[in-house]
Length: 359
Image 1: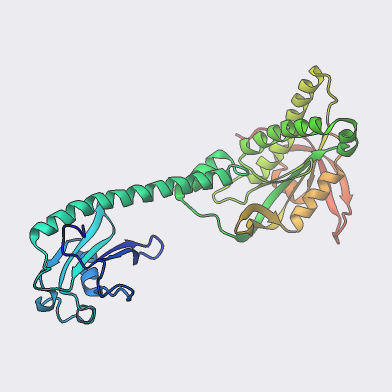
Image 2: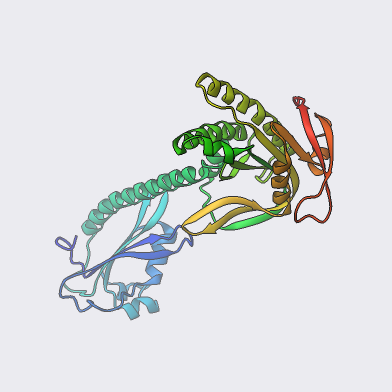
């Protein structure tokens, strides 16, 4: 536009998505202009009028315009002729294109100039909107990729639609933790090659994670051959204790199916132990800016881990706190109180024998 219009300065301002304020995005000065190297000062009066009214503004001589000339920002900026056009696409103001000249005799703008600038601005606004939409798509894809590693698909979709950014934070709440690992994993891994260990663990975790997601739980982390899952820490969750125990019982069934597949291939079967506990914990995204993980911390987590360690092969152990919340649906056998490392009081423990379906 500098080649066809008498422009001394051209400035593109865009709306900051966080604050809603106009922020200078691009500046161009005519070569040889006295403004080169100086601070760019624009009239806040003009910008505010164009932004608020969503109408373009043209003035051949701003200093003589009774509605603008008295503004301090106009006089201080020594603006003469100006064209200021809102960048609007689909009824959304994305920014402003500001063009001005300081020569009132040879460089005043005409209505024809305004028509040209408005046509260019319409295309610019569409380009800006497309850029914003592309950024939103990329953000959604990034969030979805990050969350899909540990959240069930329907939760990932909901969070991605909201466009919520993952931030370091934590909330205190009551949740239910499930730990599951392979009994005798160390001896097993020593008897087979590293490649076979990796293949086995991938198959093992793939099956367990499907169960966790089926019951709308969160995969907290993998620790060697151990999987930690959590239930009840997301908004609007119900029946989390029941779902956690149902998932724990289905772990036994799904590993039994895995062993059938392994037997057909001449592979040694694996056995698992599962521990479930309900209690107070801190849940949220924890880590550094480059790598955040959803996790839970607290004594309830330690107790669930200890229950898992105490479980025999293909056994699901639950604590008293979990049992009291699911006792109407489960058949159990009391194991008795257990003294766990780091715990002052003993933990009453039950083996789950079966769980009834909920209506």
